[in-house]
Structures are given as C-alpha cells and as structure tokens.
Image: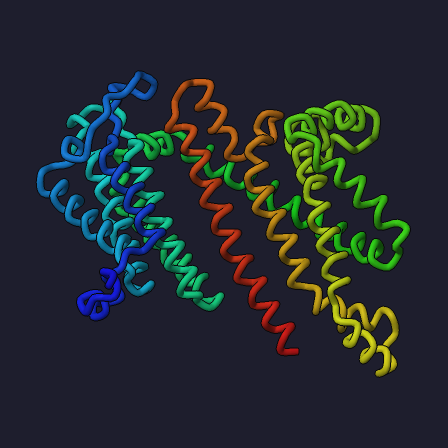
Length: 397
C-alpha cells in the first residue's frame, strides 16, 4: 500500500496539498526576502549601500514585515481558496508598499536633503512574487468585467492615497518628482496625447481601410503586406526616417509649420505611432468581419437589407470584439513606444527615462518608467474587460 492510499492521506484536507504555482511564487518571494530591501545613497548619483530587511526598518516594522511575509509564503504554498489568496496577496502588497515608505524615512538622516533611499532588488522581487499570486487568484476567480475594473480603480485609489498621505515622500523617486512636478505633468499630457491620439487617428483610418480590404479581396494582400513591412521597421529607425520628409514639408508647404509639423517633435512621433498602429487594426477588422456567421448574413439578406445596412447592423456589431482586441493591442503597444519619442524631441515620459540614463540617476529613470508601465497595465485591464463585455453582448444578440 502506498502512502497516498493510507487512511491519513485519505482524510487529509484538500487545502493541505501544495499549490504547484504557489511553490514557485514562494521561492521567488524567499529570494526577495534574502536580497536587499532598500538602497541608501549619500546623493542621487553615487553608488549606494544596500540594506537588508532588518537594517532597512525599525525593529517593530521589520518584525511586522517578517510575519506578513511568512503568512504570504504559507498562503502561496497551500492549495487554498482563490479568494483567500487574493485577500492575503493584496494585504502583503499593501504592507510592502507602506513599509517601503517607512524605510525611506528611517534611513534618511534628519535634515539631510541630499541623501536618497530607493527600493532594493528584494522589494521589487517581493512585489513581483505577490503580484503573480494576485494574478493567479484573479484568473481562477474569473470575475466579471465590471468587477475587474472596480478592483483596478480600488488599487489605483489605494496608491493615490499612499502618495497623498506623504508616506513615500522620502523615497528618491518622489524627491525627483518634487523637483520636476510641473515638467512631469506636462510630459504626462504629451504622453497621453501621443499614445491615445495616434490610436484614435489609426482607428479612424484603419477601420474603413479594413472594411475595404474585406470587401475587395485583390486589394487585401497588398495592403496587409505593406503594413507588415512598416511593422518590421525598428521604432528608432522609423522615428529617424520621418525627420527629413517632415522637415521638408515644414519648410516648403505654406502653413505646415504653423500647425506643428516639423522635423523633430510631436509630428514625426505621432506619424510613426500612427503607422505602427495600422496593421493590428486593419488585420483585426478583416478577421473580425470574416468570422461573422454566414447564417447571420443570409438572414439579414433575407430581410431585404442592403449591403450597407448589413455591414452597419449585423457584420460590424458581431465583428466588434475582434476589432476592439486590435485596438487594445495597439494602445498598449503605443503607450510603451511613446517613450522612444523623447529621442526626437517628442516628449512624454521617455524624457525622464533618457535624462536619468544620461545622468546615471536610476530613480529618474523610474519616474518615467513606472507611470508608463502602470498606464499600459490599466489600459490592458480596461480594454480586456470591454472586449469581454462586447463579446457577451454579441452572443446574446
């Protein structure tokens, strides 16, 4: 008789079994706990001094974090209910973020305005581990789209409350923000305009172009091949290639420079992002329209609908979830690609990334990178929810 067949094994609770993904999460978290929790530097550019978990926090806070992490390890390892994992994971992340701010206040000498404290590799690895635990729990729970959006709003509100409370004011990234607050919000506006504006223009152009490609089969292969070629051009190269023609247009066409067209700046960045956006939107429009059930089209034709009426009332609504998936891909892609626009004077969060690289100030890099990642993640969650909602509506109809 094997061990698994013994009465003790038969009566053992299901939750006592190990979660396979949880074992990996616990190993990642254990590595994070062993790595430096914070990095102390005498000023913003010198090499830092690493601080472990018990050096980076006062005794009571290090004990609290240790107990919290042990609880998180246990919940990750065991095969517990997904809701339990979700609640514990959020609790661990909340403690981590709050105590990171406490670590910065603890390590910064009183009255010292030059010292910098940054999250260490251990902090980021712990955040990654328990974010993975959250993702797994959310996947298993399969919340409805509006519930997922509500969770996203709640997390954003919690982070906003933490920043508003001043709990992170002593962190180096927030000190970089304090020195550049007006520039930060100006570049944030530029980043949003470039990312969302390019997607809006690409949708206005790509949707009709996709419909034409669907209706005119000989045209389809040529258009998609051209767009595929554009997609293979490296982003920096495409930004650079647009400098010369746009500079010529600005210099030779009356009124072009007056509306903002120039060799560098937002114009080439917007054109490049628009060009990158076309392929997913056009191809998803074609695929979405092709996936419409022939029976639905025949029924509409039998009702006496014209081609335009069938397209507007039947084909486009049924294809919309696939089209929206293409827009989702493009938006997330462009939020990241807009960072590169700073290389040609286009602005955006990339300004801080490249300034930080040039000054070897990694917290300045984070000031540009973290909002970009957060914005892309939020856009993906919201648009995934909208895709699912429209797909359900299409099935009902």
